Image (cartoon, rainbow, N blue to C red):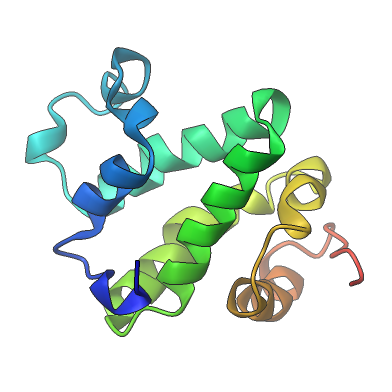
Length: 131
């Protein structure tokens, strides 16, 4: 799927297409009625929780898929998607060293570029892995 398809208007639908498990009760009940929620709420709560869950229970394929979705967001033509990524999703990744270490190998170039720029400003206790 092309990153150009990633817009604020399509983001919720794309998320559930890419990750059908997020439509299960475990995740949906985090925000109530998903249909009434915008992408900041859905991604900021549901997708962030999934990212955290996959640190412990995920398999490499799950982590690679998450990283692919993040890379598409990072490359989106819609700058609203890029802003959402930076303020709602990426902070989930720098909550712990373990989280950033778990996902680093799967990140694409644009996701890494943004993290290299943001992490020293917002999470100086986190050490980014070297390539």
